[in-house]
Length: 234
Image 1: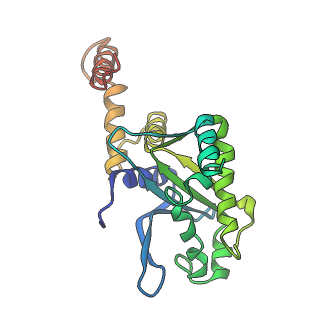
Image 2: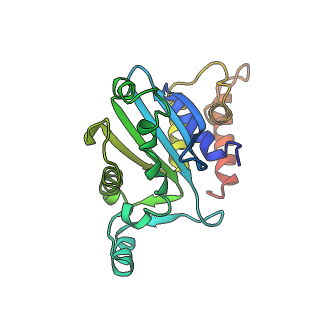
Image 3: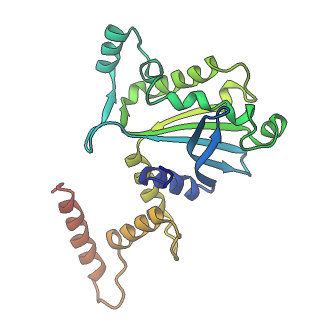
């Protein structure tokens, strides 16, 4: 499938709002006949930060997977592994093995030297239906970084310049909504996810024109109640 999926649109919208240039579905050849892609590539030319983002969702519509103290004990007992990276190396994290193609095959910059000149930080992001316990998040992200460096012979960046971000589409959309609430834009963004967040902001925090005193507060109360009711949260 070549069309951009909803989660990839959320990722693209998030990094665009953060001031990055973005490109969804960045395809590349992995061998003579093999092809793969990065779901979203984002780049900030001023800060020289490159983002490689992967979106994954396994299971049924309401399934959310967990990695917590219980999962870690289960993984160690059944699979003899106790880190998130080892537990998901062959599934949610199988895209990590493709990361070195960026500088080995000059996918984004035309040479290894140009990559070093153009990139000061690399963010590898997994956006999935995986929730990681807060007390295990830093350790889990560190295990993914170790997985990357274990599998490559050379990297143009030092280990501390490579950052791992494990998050969910829900969290990213909440971040988008929060940023738009704090700094609303007068005209539309021309991005379906950002414009959806902009419209939610309009009715959840309305400024009613020509409605008389108290009209804004009344509409805010009504729309907030409707919003909560529609999600069965009342």
